[in-house]
Image (tube, rainbow, N blue to C red; front, side, top):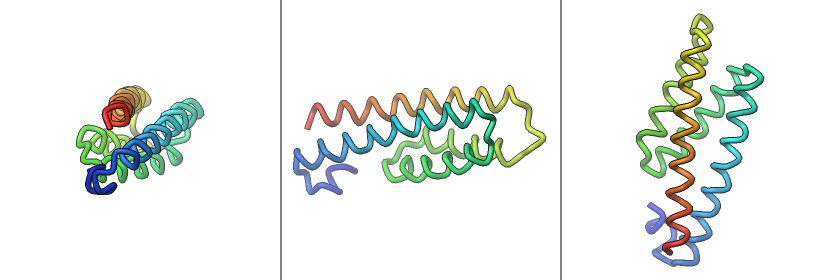
Length: 108
């Protein structure tokens, strides 16, 4: 995906990979903050935004985590434990996503 977007230019690949990694770090911080405040509406919006990046990069696991979080946030009857577990899965998926882009930046 990065190769297509950057015409295989190593400098552009590194720059774009760093941009994805930095945005991901901000998403992770925002996820933790919104979850800590119990802000389901904010979590739902964040999940939707992250899902777009995940789909663009082809990260199916991250996309599925976002879909699940959106579903849980939209259901007020959902218990907090399911939401907590989903947020933990999303945090793990975001960490893997960030690491993959850090590795791409190093390898370019």
